[in-house]
Length: 83
Image (cartoon, rainbow, N blue to C red):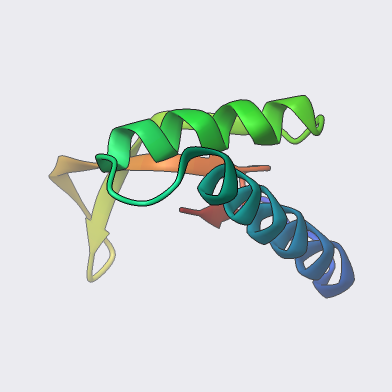
């Protein structure tokens, strides 16, 4: 299992995500569909040199058993934060 980032790093990263989200909302305004905001947020985070994955597939486990089902994460930041 991969070791998690230090709390201080996660806090800084969370702040960067929040700042990017506010920036997108200020630029694009309210009322658009989620996919527009998501695309712009990913673009903004990439411009900030933040590692971002989209539509990341994760296999589901339940009570220690691997299920024949996957979960799709819309946005995964630095392999740590799910948006």
